[in-house]
Image (cartoon, rainbow, N blue to C red; front, side, top):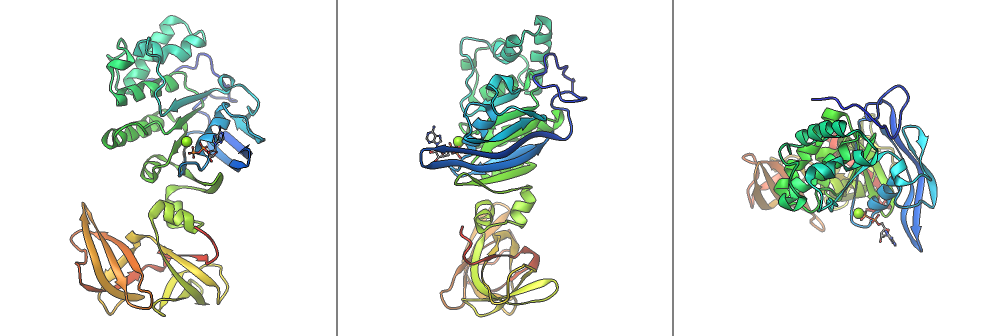
Length: 379
Ligand code: ADP
Ligand code: MG
């Protein structure tokens, strides 16, 4: 992989090239934006390290784009500060922040060739012609577009056009690249392929990326850390593993893993565990130790992939397999639990070992995979 020289660094971080610095690449403190009565973003704060791939994940309207646009400088915050490479950029124009952008719509200049499109940020910065040619060539090669430099955007497929847009953001090696649903307009197969490519390029070049998506799987595939956004708030900012295994709220448990929820009351604690008396079955479920008072009414969350179907005599509850659907390497099963209002538990088990419809099973779970929340916590 060829190294890029930084010809006109937008931000000269102490002792290093943009994009290759260590430490904080970007920090956001108390960022807030309202539109009339709508709080689009509410006191967002986060620190992003150089070389990190961070994703804003949330449903439509949760404030992802507004947060990104404030960082980019296209949207003025009501309050809060944005720092890039240690420099306060909150009041700076977008082009003075030294950030790269890739949006869902490719926004390529139709009258320019691919090469000219990619060269554009360098041309703007007055980089010498021979240097532009070299760096455009290298960048197109990284994105698998060598030989396409002379074409017009309309002569390329959607995926190729989005790669060109990516090249244009990469070519001057900004310390941080912002991407807002860049693959949103592409079909699933192409999206999967470009996700892998974007991740590979990011890792190879050590880029700092802030990426926006509403697609959980995409976020999990790409990110070092994910900020789960909801109603303008960052609900949890963590690694994919932490979000999946230790969701801080029922909302996160449901949003990332489509958790099963059960209701009960804390019966007692041991050193390592919290025992919950379940409402429907009256049985005891052992959970990882949680800081909840004895007697507290709780909500229990368990991911479908963490429940196991065993012998009918086993487990914290028993039931009958109502549905068993083969989906590739796993079987999705629905188990109607014996008892009061008979909840349906969703299980995901490896195909081949899966239960079959009508079978009687006992449900087991590792206590470490059981998350508890106060009953009043929403989500
Ligand atoms: P997302 O990107 O997560 O879909 P947005 O950041 O676009 O969400 O929007 C967050 C909230 O702010 C939404 O309720 C949206 O309707 C509102 N909003 C965004 N931009 C504007 C605007 N220019 N004028 C008024 N309301 C806006
Ligand atoms: Mg958006």
